[in-house]
Amino acid sequence: METKKKDIRALTKEQLRNFFVEQGDKAFRGNQVYEWLWQKSAHSFHAMTNVSKETRQMLEDHFVINHIRVDQMQRSSDGTIKNAVRLHDGLVVESVLIPTATRTTACVSSQVGCSLDCRFCATARMKRMRNLNADEIYDQVVAIDNESRLYHDRPLSNIVFMGMGEPLMNYNNVLKAIEMITSPEGLGMSPKRITVSTSGVPKMIRKMADEEVKFGLAVSLHSAIDEVRTSIMPFNANFPLKDLREALEYWYSKTKNRITYEYVVWKGINDTQEAVDALVKFCKFAPSKVNLIEYNPIDDDEFQQASDAAVAMYQNTLERNGITVTVRRSRGKDIDAACGQLANKQ
Ligand code: SAH
Image 1: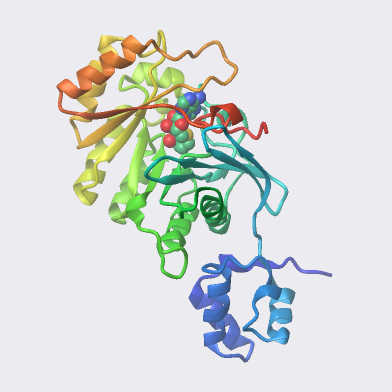
Image 2: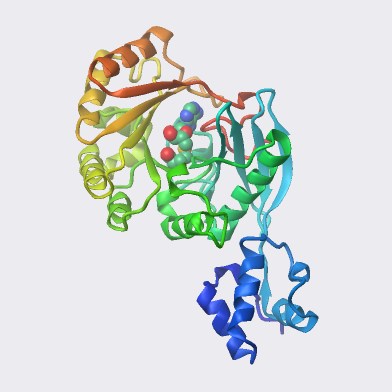
């Protein structure tokens, strides 16, 4: 009977070193293999050329490397690239490369589908099938980095966890992936160039604060009025704004990292003076800035981008109150690669 082989990248470096000792080999062999698995992103044991054939076979007998496969790559007229990424069990997630004049950003997924139910988001229509493992998140970044070098002649500069899924509902694996992305034994990127975007899970925001993480935090706010927020993001009923606000104040007190609020202005939903005033008030609890993002339609009549005048009203009011605000245009819309459009449509 064949026993199920273990994903070798689920092992820490220490565990891998111990494994080799148990096999009667040297612990150092674990370091070599670890380097192949992460820094060199080997797809097979066969590729590990400084390890003996016998050792490679022994590894093959015990483990698998669950490397992702980019099944389909689409390129937008604006340079945005979307990857459909196939996982070892056949499920598919998407990741996106967004180039601008000064940076290339990877937008990666953390779950297959999503646990939440935001009514304006295409991913929410898929149910959550499973969490991604740390290596599956890491591999998405490596794939985008390679594409960035190939198509844009520069390495990846930033990473945002704004693809499919709610990263804070897959906390351990997201943090482990970030650890490898920032480690010199992985990609060696600065945590300052990484942003985790959440719809706002207060308990997990507090946990991150306690762990004094070094990456940035973005919160998809969309409304600072409970009633409105619950109507468009139903889980808000369980995590009301007061709890979110207190968790964010705690985050700032611990990390001294200001918070980014992502915010879409919709016609008839939050395009009122009252809504702007509530946002201004919310922004004053902890240092923050606001990204006004464009709505990307998802075949639904219920949500429509507000008028330019309403967006300008937001911008002016926020600025008048000393709050930094940027207005973001969408990228990659022609290939369904923009925020909220990831739903494996292809
Ligand atoms: N679950 C995380 C990350 C994924 S969503 C979060 O909620 O932050 C990434 C961003 O896209 C969020 O700010 C989300 O609110 C926004 N978004 C979702 N659907 C959208 C749409 N149709 N148009 C524009 N932005 C959308």
